[in-house]
Amino acid sequence: MDFEYNEEQTILKDTLRKFMDKEIIPLANEYEAERTQITKKIIKKLEPFGYVGATVPEEFGGFDLDTVSYCIMVEELGRAWGGLRTMMTVSNLVTTIIYQFGTEEQKKRLLPPLISLDYMAAFALTEPNAGSDAGSVETTAVRDGDDYILNGTKTLITNGSIADVVCVFASVDRSKKAKGITAFLVEKEKSKYSTSKILKMGMHSSVFSEVVFEDCRVPASSILGEEGKGLKVALNGLNVGRCIVAFAVIGLAQASLDAAVRYAKERTQFGKPIGQFQLIQEKIVDMAMELDAARLLANRAAFMIDKGVNCIKEASFAKLYATEAALRIADKAIQVHGGYGYCQEYLVERYYRDARHLTMAEGSSEIQRLIIGREILGLSAII
Image (cartoon, rainbow, N blue to C red; front, top):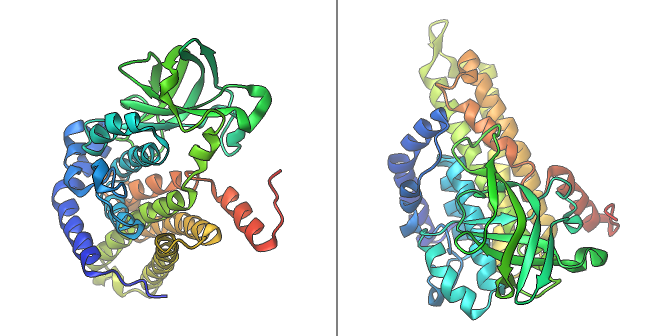
């Protein structure tokens, strides 16, 4: 299987790398150190590249790119700024499912401002008592004439407090369990809900929120897809989502490796660069090898998606291996830096913190192992 990028993809990667180095990385260092929230002005810098709506057809204002090309974009943004990357890919996720499941009215009204980055979106599935078990959603949606009234709490929601539209999953009938879950497009300008900031270990400049719906009235026309088919909406595109997370963390791992190599050449001890010491070389070789393996797994899954080949196992392999390898790579980068690696002045401690979150996003490492086990054995450990 040939994973070589075509000419357009190679140009895209090179163009983005230069742009990120010049326009985004200097901002990332400053904003993350001060825990300053990413601004709309920074977000709009990414509009020409299509970070939201990349795979949406041009007739709806998208860029009609394939999965591999979008993953290249994700890797370069992940290398530059993990916090900005997560905000963009979540908004893109909601934009994509609006294209896939939305009515013509929803598409015409919401896709243009989302793709132009005038709007941001949030994906609100996780709750205090519903994480990996998505079918146990407790937020309720009760029909009241032409409206639904939402009550419940969502947590760990990227973009929650800044989103112009939130894709909310709520149950219209708790007795039906998973079959009662329905997706709603809740717009900030039309429906009232409250948000609060959640402080987190990494990605300090991105928005992470608790979102509370208290008698929140939304029109019935805000349903995304069909009533009772919300889990289909939520779980659609899981393979793509896992590829995206894999490439996001590969970007972070690349940044960690680059920093370690740079430091190993510059730092001298005992009269020579530390890169000449065998144990330092061993660490850097292991980092490069794991990064290469992660990228190969992720590229394989992305190529399979573009060819329409079922790749549940391969996408989970990529997500699981890349996220855990990135942590090992970032950890070694800190060790190469010695005591300085623990200081904010050097970026490797941030790369470690940012990567840590991604072992849980899009299905934790434990869930990925259960999925892979089911694919290999034909037996499910999840009841």
